[in-house]
Amino acid sequence: MGNVVQRQTRGALRFQLFRKMAGLELLSDQGYRLDGRKATELRKFQARMGVFAQADGSAYLEQGNTKALAVVYGPHEVRGARSRIRHDRAVINCQYSMATFSTAERKRRPHGDRKSTEMSLHLKQTFEAAVMTQLYPRSQIDIYVKILQSDGGNYSVCVNAATLAVIDAGIPMRDYVCACTVGFVDETPLADLCYAEEGGGVSSLALALLPRGGQIALLQMDARLHQDHLEALIEAAMTACKGVSKVLDQVVRQHLQEASVPSAE
Amino acid sequence: MATVQVSEAEKVYILHGIRDDLRVDGRGCEDYRHMEIETDVVSNTDGSAKVTLGDTAVLVGVKADIGKPRPMVPNEGYVEFFVDCSANATPEFEGRGGEELGTELSNTLYKVFNNKHSVDLKSLCISAGEHCWVLYVDVLLLQCDGNLYDAISVAIKAALFNTKIPRVHISADEEGGKEIELSDDPYDCVRLNVKNVPCIVTLCKVGHRHVVDATLQEKACSVASLIISVTRKGTITCTRKVGGGSLDPESIFEMTEAGKRVGKALHAPLMKLLQQEESLGKARQKVGFLG
Image (cartoon, rainbow over all chains, first blue to last red; front, side):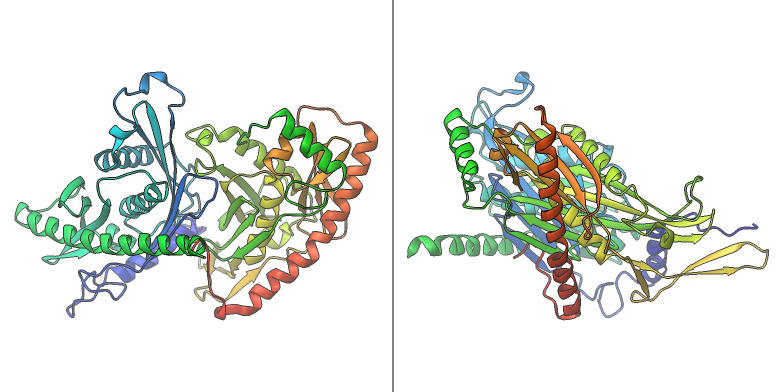
């Protein structure tokens, strides 16, 4: 009482206003989501490889309003702990961090908090399944991903950006690694969730897929979902990932075409 | 900073070149590399800018939040700096490796902006002693090829120019307290006056001459550098010597004069470019990292 002071920061205020709007419908009767997409539609995809000249491989990816930058260094000699050297394969080292201005509410620590460490471990696990590490024994591959703007589906955007960066670095992989975050609302799976949908009480599942063989590299879900719906959700996620893989393939081919034009002359 | 190994022969080559006013990439001693500036790159922030200076890439985001003013100066807002040396720039910055450099950079930024002329802090006040605007300036280092201070200061100036702070209405509520209302209209905003924001010029002493905008290789050949922050009128707000070598007073005077000259010449084209970009308005094609 007394002084009505806005103790909340503007980020929190913005989100509350958004939630009032979002409380309306995550999926309307006509089948449209908050941003006008259909249930299985992915967000707008824009990507570029070879963004930085100094790194061995780099890529920038935008999926809707989520922007991620991935940089790869390696394979090079193992730095730091000599105990990490594996005699038969390369060690993959990932770091996930978010820019302090990436979220609506300013983040005080870019990395080092629990969520970032967990994400880094997930990325490591995902890429150990895809990268052909047996070709580089006793060496290390560093994958650094930075989120410049966060609007949902952070893990998936990171994985997709990192795939492009690893390809740009020329490190051989078994297949593209495509990831997508899907959610379940009103008996319908929604592909490629945005921030409002993720926070709106939707059971979300993140899936990383190697599309050609249909093999799942990482599956993560920490919400409640009835087991009857699980299969449908995973199916939807795999379809969305296959869609992502087509786009990634297009991006890589276009990049190669652009890069090879000068040498053709 | 990212280190680069330079052999003795390369050092001699660079030294002799600079002595004759010809650097490795053909520039003169007081020329900058190709600089690209773009504002409004990150839409989540109140203002942002991306600057690429040769191979150095810096991204700055400015967020404005309402906070309590400092007790010593109740009718002013304040600016907080944070520099994040990300692992993208070099693997040495992974984990806590970039913290040392980041702290050094942000401390220097505090010193540069620690005067009442650079940013008009009084305009950031909402109600004296109770509320004020706090500008959080976050610098993200993406690629490192020497001359970080210059790139960061240009990016900060561009980001502050781009910052849109929503208008605030203070009304008294029923019980005599103050209620703050932020304007809902995204176009109803206050812009900052960045005319007096200084730009930092780094001068490296290589041999007997000094160079502006040194690359990492040239830095490896230099003994010491001088960092000068200059406003558009030629006033110096902060001077600092960095590096392990020593400089004699005449060199410092010479370098200060050169720094003033170069810094002063940097402001006018920068403001012109920013205003030109602003005047394009909605028609401007946002490129960001995609171009």
